[in-house]
Length: 157
Image 1 (spheres, one colour):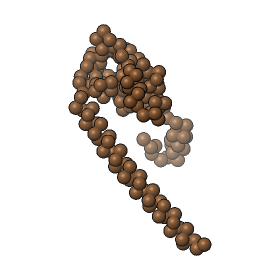
Image 2 (cartoon, rainbow, N blue to C red; image 1 turned 90 degrees about the vertical axis):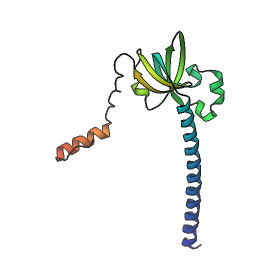
Image 3 (cartoon, rainbow, N blue to C red; image 1 turned 90 degrees about the horizontal axis):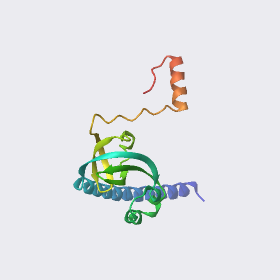
């Protein structure tokens, strides 16, 4: 068999795969934009006391059964950022946005923007909300910076 025919078949398969991924990505992007609009439309500001925060599975989080039934089967096993809060006299578990999970203070009263059972943002009620602690540098990053320091180059940030 001619090697050019094999190369041509491989290129055609890759082009078809890229086209399929492109259209699936656009469809997922439209769906995410619709969901974001719904979150923005239903958001409200609530004063709450943060009791605890953890990353845990949906089954273990203590969320309502209706929420568990509506989630896709693949998502049920993944760990989500869960925040246990006290709103008025009621204690409940809410799902936190991944972007703000590290900055949510524990055992403090905050004003949070909530849409259903989803926490979108958090502001401190009494004082400021503390910034998340700086992440530790990996061994590779420390070794790279040490090598650059010895060489006299500027370290990366």
